[in-house]
Image 1: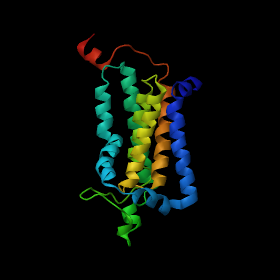
Image 2: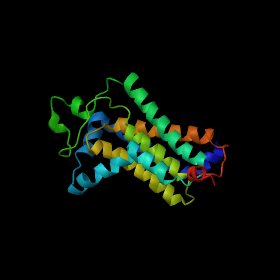
Image 3: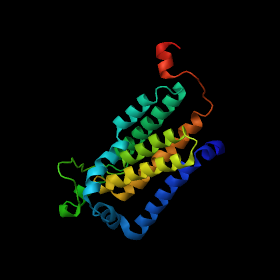
Length: 214
């Protein structure tokens, strides 16, 4: 466990910083004001870039990433996929069983829809807000990838990118900030758990190697 933490501590510490700041922001400003602080901070540049940023938390990005790294040892590919898939299952289960009544901003502010700033022509979801699946997926996938790099600045950047995915969900009006920071927590917990599970599994052959029988 200690070895896994030390090998990726800069990703974990940067993620923890995001979670802590988010928790403090929620505690000080509350659910609504913390949402407004991000969602109402508009600019043409952010309107353009945020839909692309949020895609990093999409399931298609996870599949693309796994295929992109098909040269890796198969156990590494399986670990990346399993981390993403279990995170996805956890989020869906929590959404549809425990917090099924938690509405997204557009439904929460039903009587005052002008309080939710959105980008024109973007589909805005209305239910099952908690937790944010895109955020959980981003921390799970980018956290898995961070193990592949030895440079600490890359690990930090990957955690920053994952945090930006969370912020994009609030900016786009899809989630409250509480959904995002607990999505971050789920992604990190799954990442650590799967890293411990796969720690002693070793294979040199990649998926391409198996296909080509090399």
